[in-house]
Length: 226
Image 1 (tube, rainbow, N blue to C red):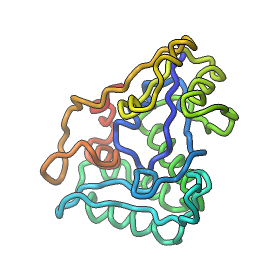
Image 2 (cartoon, rainbow, N blue to C red):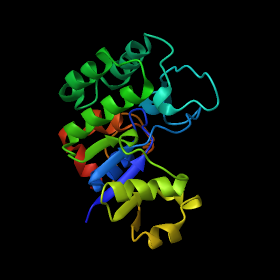
Image 3 (cartoon, rainbow, N blue to C red):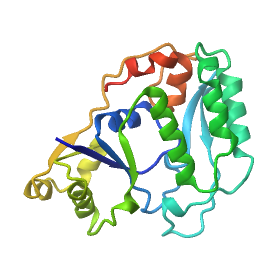
């Protein structure tokens, strides 16, 4: 049985994103779709003593049809600002030193395109978490059809019989089409995560996985589901 999940890339995503990767045999980065402003593509949340804080990569928004994979970075010093924010707020985290070298390397030469930056962070964090799922770019598959048909096309081209989806996709996924194509639909469950020790209260699950990594280090996988 081969399981496939397909998602847009996000910037330093929350832990649930890495769970859906871990649950998959093949994870498809689907960035050949419209870039959406004020979304998770170029920003995420960290915890600070003053509450939650957004880390946002400034990007060039040139037109409404702009794709995520074509979205370029707008400034050259955002990486230094983000790294400094992480140092200021997490230098006292129990596992900051363990993850420090990886963190500095990721922010040293980030890249010019948002998709490339997101992929670099995602693959590096997967390696740290020992998630060995194969990650590919949807453009390698030359997908055809409408929104549902492209998902089915990806599964068929990857010889997958199970498609894993986040619960929000229930609004648009045509379950009958998947059934007709003999592809099982598996819905990701993002509830009942275990809490871990965060530097700042109150506890929040909906923050970047960076928070989990710096607080729990090599034990991070114990706070994921897969």
